[in-house]
Amino acid sequence: MAEAEEGFRFELPKVGIIKGVKAQDIEVVGEKVVNVRVRAKPYSNMYTAEQLERVAEVAEKYGSGKVHLSPRHNLEIPEVGSSRLTRALQELFAAGLQAGGSGTSVRNIFTCAEYCPNRVKSVRELGAILSELFGDTPLPNKFTISLSACPAGCARPWNVDVGIIGVAELEVAPERCREGCTACVEACPVDAISLEGGLRIDEERCVGCARCAWACEQEAIKTGKRGFRVVIGGKEGNTVAFARELLGMADDYQVIETVDGVIRRYRKLARKRDGKKYERLAEVIQRMGGVEAFMQAEGS
Amino acid sequence: MDGIISGEGKGKVVLRVTSVEPHTAELTSEQLRVLARVARKYGSRVVHTTPRQAIEVPDVPRELVEEAVRELERAGLRAGASGRLTRNVFACSRWCLYNAVPVAELAEELNRRYGGAEMPAKLTISLSGCNFSCSRSRTSDIGVIARTKIRVDREKCIKCGLCVNEPLGCQVDALRVSKEEPVVWNRERCVGCGFCSNVCPVSSITADERGFDIYVGGGGGFFPREARLLKEFVSQEEVLEEVARVVERYRELAEPGERLFSVVERVGLEEFE
Image 1 (cartoon, each protein chain N blue to C red):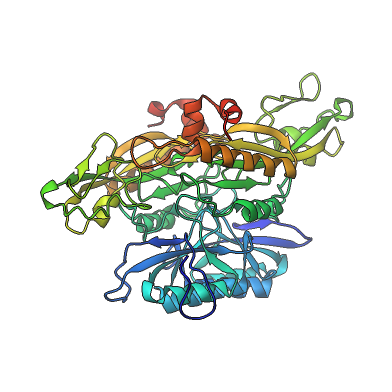
Image 2 (cartoon, rainbow over the protein chains, first blue to last red):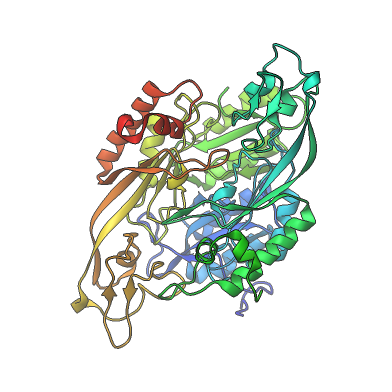
């Protein structure tokens, strides 16, 4: 691994430095420019004011003063001249920002906002642990993990390799339901509740977002156990695949164990397409005939 | 008020902030400094980044919202993109080598026209500069994907390998080059992302034509579904016209609160058109 020759002891990152197109409004003459993709490290889905200011400073000093926002919490500083790259990375590093999250590896883990009132089960801590364990792990192709604290899925868990969704079980006491009140029906985003002939939740349709329970003032619907739903094998790129359920209700330990198992299997089972590139997880699962077959395969 | 969403703590709200000027798909260093200042002054010194190029400032006391918003607005930022409004139009990076057509400017135009516009329900518009759709154009209400039709002149190839070298090289194995043999292009596999034409130093591979595919009716979250192809390989002007038409039809046909995918599924794509 290349070590920096200037500044403090510093190992140059293997990912997060991306070849880029030189735009016209920058004066880095006769030099290659790169895009630097950074994120907070240790893991956070927030940036502090100081980190924003450091990114601003680095973008001005070494880039073109612009910053692109990625969909995975990364801030990208485009057009950094390669002769000053090490210094730029060191200044970012000093503020708790590291380059990463590109190439054929585990990309930056996305977790939705911790303060969102819709969250069923908090995901930031779990995201941090998954990042600690698996972040930047080299794999046959890119690998995305996203965590959503509720089934509204702002983190887009259905179109990533591993999606983790905070869900609740619901406890229904129809006898407590007050006639004429329709609060739960109005709160339900997926039309899973019927009141005709008594309060009933259609379990096929229910996604476990708990909004009915929060709307019910009679405690006719209450939240029971909370945990995580784990779905795998989604992607969006030149083709789309929606993730399939692996676990319906898991705790944090089971999630970590499962993600570890999926990554091991993927590493082992991914084949080259008929050219140079390896399959994404979605393709492996599809080739093997589904999530169950994938999880039962020998040799992981 | 648009862009003010509820958060944790009594009397405190979250500001969802997007950029209006000078760009919508990127922030200037000055805007980052303003966001830092606003987070420090009115919030709790931290911000969250969303998957749609918005930055959220949590923990702002309700009574300071107006002042905070004024400060943001002076820097070309606005609070917005929540409720039954068009979300921030997402565009991928204009600096990416995978670019059939950089879409940041098109996003700016669409944001000027529709950013924060009232709709029957929330409406997401996502633009991708190439077929790999980092912007998730195929799971948004309206998706636009830029494509090229490339032309290969084997005579000019210097066998440098830039178009196929790892890790960036052709992602779909549509090109083959070796020290012995100049570039071979597999037309069937090519998805028209434009990468090879962007890196080829000798114009052996060029992007002959560039156009946009338009998708409608995709969704994520509660309602994951793949968008349907509405128009193929149209010009940038036609994208603006088509998006205007889709928005108009959506407003005509939707029940209050109904998402675009639901309208398209209910009436059928042909009828929707």
